[in-house]
Image 1 (cartoon, rainbow, N blue to C red):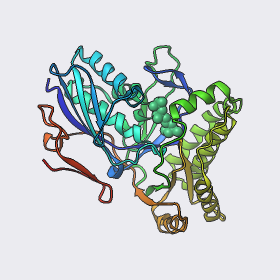
Image 2 (tube, rainbow, N blue to C red; image 1 turned 90 degrees about the vertical axis):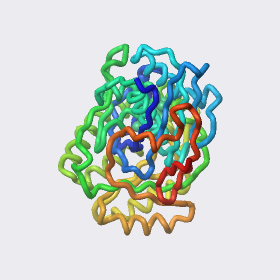
Image 3 (tube, rainbow, N blue to C red; image 1 turned 60 degrees about the vertical axis):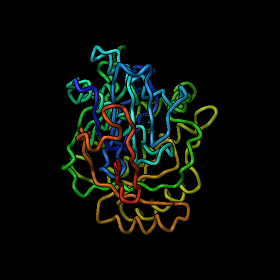
Image 4 (cartoon, helix red, strand yellow; image 1 turned 60 degrees about the horizontal axis):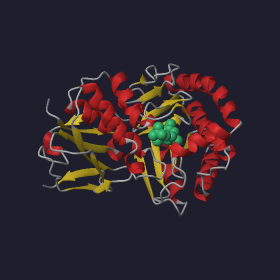
Length: 359
Ligand code: DP6
């Protein structure tokens, strides 16, 4: 066993949102099935992990900062424990992670991060997990990350078992299924989220009546989405995405005390997209637990949407992503830490979407 590996994973963006847990950490199983598209490599996360008898506890660095508080470590540590259990190992780990995803703006940062960590553990501990079992390891870290195990479009099944064993992700369509599909990610705010999704969804399950209606609506919406994706029908796909995002933010507002993730800029984006769609639906917005909009569309409409987004002053940056692939192991020359545990010199170049290891 090498006890040492590096892997990369891409974020995924939910078209049908996961919101609410039927099983709390460290299992994590959701109340509802969710569906996402995996993005390309521009916002990827790279993670190097080393398990060693030299270490007295787990240590995690993200973008150069050591995670020290229980809150900062709440996702990585249960996943490391689960990986150790699968390997029958008691060795502590050092984890060094570099991400191109802007963190904590409600932009699926933990999806790429916890998928990259699971994929690195899978290599380092030679777990030889199937995609299904890798998605279960991901889920233990952060629910949404289990959908990043696949390229293309994937569904995370809620399952019904009390041990969560039937809650895993499965691929719907591969990354080549819809070549001109695009996800436009607009960066509105680098501020940290006010209410983290983990806390927010728990509050919703406990207090929102409207949430029960959302759960009833979802099966038909998911079937309709599968048909729209199968037929590469952007009008239907985009309408479903917008309706699901609106439903999520409606239940957030119905939560007590209410949670408002959207801001004035989000509203400008919503208005602009509906104006663009006046004659026929060509694009759909979607918001996770934050104000950053993502727009689903097809390639030919990207220039017009970019023009519209650039007219909104608070939009700082726009990233256009194709449909991407699942996680991959990297050769040691791309590692962020040496096999002896020394952290290497590296930097992220957000403009070029690159992670550069310098020494
Ligand atoms: C709004 O996966 O971050 O992005 O399982 O508690 O780690 P935990 O939550 P997380 O929640 C993501 C919520 C969402 C919707 C989605 O990605 O499906």
